[in-house]
Image (cartoon, rainbow, N blue to C red; front, side):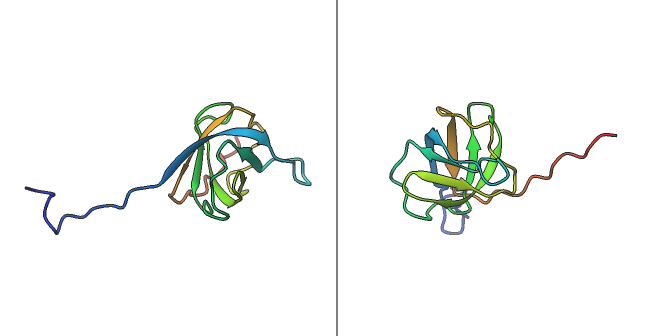
Length: 110
């Protein structure tokens, strides 16, 4: 009966959503993109703040970012892991309710 008694630790389930990029957001003053519109229109305002977003298709495949803000269908990412200039309409992504750490840029080779 190991793991089935009252003293066994149980982690809370992690909320996850998947969706598709339906439109790329406008570039900022430096010409970089940090936002897009999704196929999901059910998000609550600010619900995804600080969630991890991982692209699972497209040129950004495998790259993770942190959500800065969201509306019902628009997602804006923090600048911590860089811009999403290569994102494209039709790219798939996964949102997870876990904190995304800043990934340091690789050291420059000399």
